[in-house]
Picture (tube, rainbow, N blue to C red):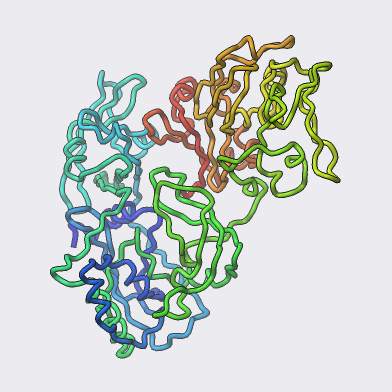
Length: 577
């Protein structure tokens, strides 16, 4: 057992290292144990083992797909080499295996002291051997021992224990321009010893008594399978089945090792009961929590496209009985089959009904965007009035109007968006004339189209540029003269900041130069996502942002001018995240 495993400080550090998806049951809780899930998380068999398994007949056991058990004991432990936390859980099968209707009583273990902690995803500069670890001002004020700010260079030495009880010393200094809290001396040694890389997370914990603890949570949890020379995968799988079968038949206790970040084969009775109240069907929308490098990438949305178990060995099993399709691609690996207790039904709102614009879609006629069909949700790209007869429009030399062919029978003529514009002098995007719009009043939709779309802007008969999605990028015109008209011209430089909200597939963009402080920013963000009053109240949503080094910070910790210079992307996330 790890050093200090019996005290509150160790338990809190273990919980923080386990991560936000931790779901370890309490002693005396009733749970469902899924042996199928336990087996699937074992190491994959080698090629030699697969050949041997083909020539062998697996013994049959009359083992149900789920086993109702009571938790007898839970031990919180950590691997010495990787610091990966896991639990040793002792279970006893219930004599009655029918699904209970009454839930477990609420497990309320009150800590004996108050804790102060933070968890930060490491950037490339954090893991550099020449630098230090940057601590957010809010985290430093709340969690680190207070510095003596009367010193010219406020400095102190911190001594903290890791999850194994090993002491680590760090130099905490407040310096730089703008000034920041840094852990310097001792930090490189910690990074090297723990083999940390960008994307891993650093956990810092201070107890009410002033004791300090440090831990890590890796982006990719390491696998430490038992070497096949010691015991084969087939034997490990048979061991799981034999152990569970014997325990069910004799009502005796058995032990499982459970990693809260990767294991879901022990499900609390309360969660199971809540799940059964949801009627999961094909076509149902859902959201699922994941751990990822981006703090907001903890929830992904998708659609159920299949219901039913796929294993002949475990008929009518609820383990990963839902086949799913994810809305958006992601860098992390996500399963194509999930269990019903891993997901939540997604309540559809107007913001969620707008699907991301499909890449590589060909141009559509104007009537497609004006019709009431589903295709009208996909933004269309207009070709400018100077195209020849091979395009979708032609030029009327008498009045400089773009003549668009009539729509399909019964739908009337397509809409003419190029009326009263000079030949070759207009800049069109999704049916919006950016030239006239930006020289007068810019609507929120036009602002969003300017940055959200990845399309071709034609600026005159011979010039065209590609404009991509903006993340505080400066979009410069190649030819201001070709974009000007009698009323004005498009600004030659525009700064936009990408905004992403948890649970909303489509991001937004905001121009910070038009705002005069945090209060105006919050008002605009609430209007942008139709959540008036929900950010300012601080009850449901929190606003964070990343800087050029991808450090995640809370909104409001810096002066407004400094914030505008350093912000790269803004996130609106739920308070629980």
